Length: 242
Ligand code: ZN
Ligand code: FE
Image (cartoon, rainbow, N blue to C red; front, side):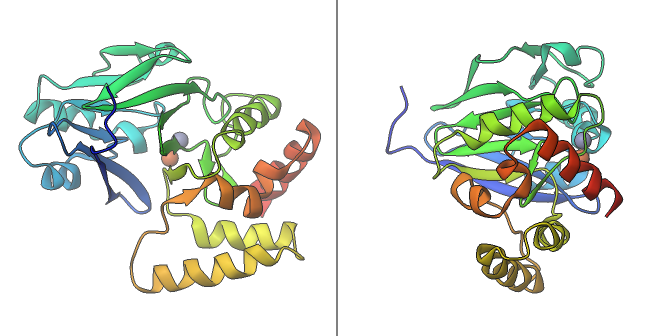
């Protein structure tokens, strides 16, 4: 039963050069999960003697590189990823399909299968929080490495349809560069001007620009706003060369 009195505490952990792992802690039960541990040491340092789940959004090393070090310290932790990532995610024990739910203490997350960046990409959708890995970034999206532009566009449209107040926690701190490209794509977009000023001030203080929200992304993210596969593909190939 999800209690309104229970809080899911979310802490971004900067990893590698510009990755974020996320520490998730259910305040009522102490149940602890980590999303996309890029490397072991910063995550181990952030943990408080308990790790129940490792939640991977996709198989890339900069999202799973810490799995083995964490499993050495917490051998009982379960490792989640998409069913099709079997053999690609180190230590994977749980093989998820679209629409399944998992529980982090009192907090339920629904699995959204969002192929495009990779063919096994998933997002973890908690009531108020969405972990997108490299599918959706602030003001951008990930490169289409394994899927097709049409696949990626459909995946992003699914995320765009979530409740506007959903907080969005992304895999990389690419926000300033992304906003620069977004301004080139949409020079008349006033929301981009204010968002860029806010993000620049945040980064100047050395802070993370996460979380965004679906509501904000619908205003500033050209890739979420692309109406057709063709628009999306054209935008994505422009960004690849930008
Ligand atoms: Zn990736
Ligand atoms: Fe990545």
